Length: 351
Image (cartoon, rainbow, N blue to C red; front, side, top):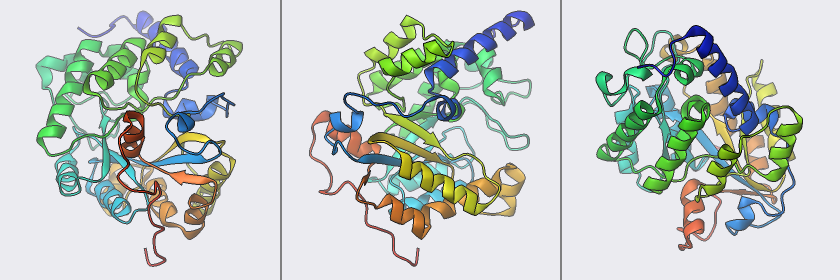
């Protein structure tokens, strides 16, 4: 049965869930809008042993496995040391290629982007678990729902958990050992019961989930703005034992490459000390990519941005430390780091 079939009830739930997500500031889009820098007594970067006065950055490429163009761009950036972290989407058509690349590059920090939406009009994907087991995740054509709102209103937490476990099993059987978990389109943080599934899965599998620390300052700020955080949700995050981010930033769309570049440079310049993930969706340009998604130009620019010499200069400044989820977990567990430096070599001018 769907989570809710009544249009009136569906609308009420959608509005309530939207307010919840906005209050939490965990969905990538809403986080960028609502969450201003907050001064904390101790950042997660400090807790993990990074220098207290540094901007500790995870440059993270999303959506490997979506298509050849994303795989090509992300693999190139990882192998060149331009980025150090990425995530792959198990239900997507090019996931097998991404998993094969991962099995040949065991040192790469590649996570699993837990996916329960298929957002494009003419390029779709279906659940791994199979239709009868996850019926509430499916639209009338047996694909995942296109929008997060549709999934939020219709999906049962039980079906979501079955599908996420199937994606994890497929990843491992395909040679990908996820170093972290993320949520595609932020869908897993649109309802309290889905948040609970997401965090419980991370704990049980001992794979860190991409979540942001909810501080007392955040809680008070959202309450003043009319978005009170329920105590049970606050408790969920307080009980979550694995590392969290101090902040999350995404790249907004821009009209020109130069505008997008200046936006990224501004983000890097203005970040406070702490552990921040900057999320990007790089892809290689092709006619196929242009047919898949209308935002193809933004993705192509993001691939170019990361190798831009001005961006690289900003990322290798004295106040920046580049890291990844492997290093984060090694520090969290007290294991020796893989290398003395937590920053990759600066890419050459030819890259």
